[in-house]
Image 1 (cartoon, rainbow, N blue to C red):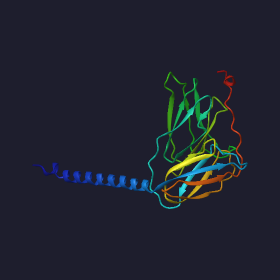
Image 2 (cartoon, helix red, strand yellow):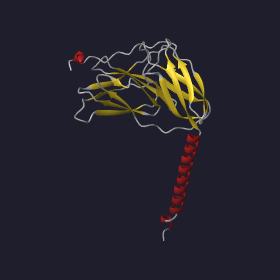
Image 3 (cartoon, rainbow, N blue to C red):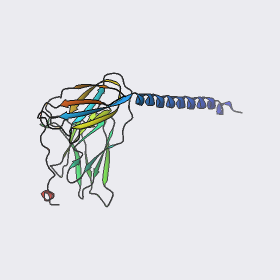
Image 4 (tube, rainbow, N blue to C red):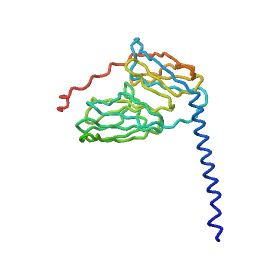
Length: 241
């Protein structure tokens, strides 16, 4: 018998066993990490005391933390001549899925961000999505590997604006209409909360929180400015639709 055909088999079995052990160890570590994780509830106000909606909340543990699995694609819908949601946040390496639910074509293109349009987008891109056909809206996925901000626009409809924040931390959220956001699965210990808003001219002050698995950490933060009022939905006859 030719020994060359049988020699690799023990090594193959050994390799599979090692891979199985490593997978089991990884699952155990993730389970242990989840067992010692907590949540943070944060309320953000504008400088005028009003709730600060559409604010990106970024939480960075001050200690070491393990890599987190990438989430499912974040969906940004073009609907009623708007980007919905207005602000989206994804981790580095994450994916944004653009979906057109309107009955007419749209573009999605990257634009400079910031209230003065002076911040270069983290990634340059442009794509076109055809009108919805029956119950099947057109969609396109875009993977984002560089941290930073990306303003969104539509070449066909100049009033459309949206924003994507590509985060270096996997713990992030966007405040709702009441200025509130909750982050889950945060490692126990001290953490730093930072904020970002599309209208800000300068960085926002950081807030420190103590995370524990026993009970949610509650924090309050305040922007150093009052965001502009968001524009209302464009009238349909503005574009003769």
